[in-house]
Length: 78
Image (cartoon, rainbow, N blue to C red; front, side):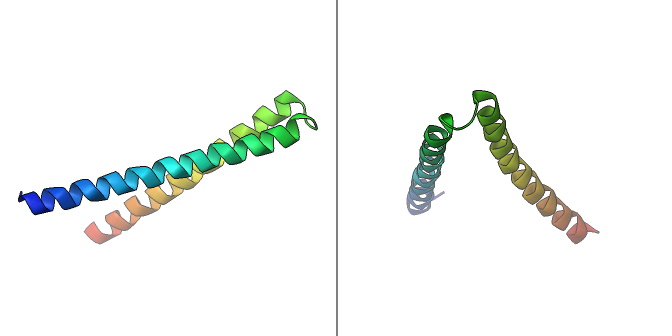
């Protein structure tokens, strides 16, 4: 692999890691605001249930995308 290609790949990886971290930080920041507002209005048990639903929603969307991508790959091989 040439040096130019290596530098380009390294740059792309470094830039994408920063975006991933920003997205994660924003999610936790939003969750903190929601939790602060709801803490006074909802019992802790219900708040934890809402957090779990949010996490499961993200996992479900990720799985649906992954399964869809695999199905597209299977159709191409058939």
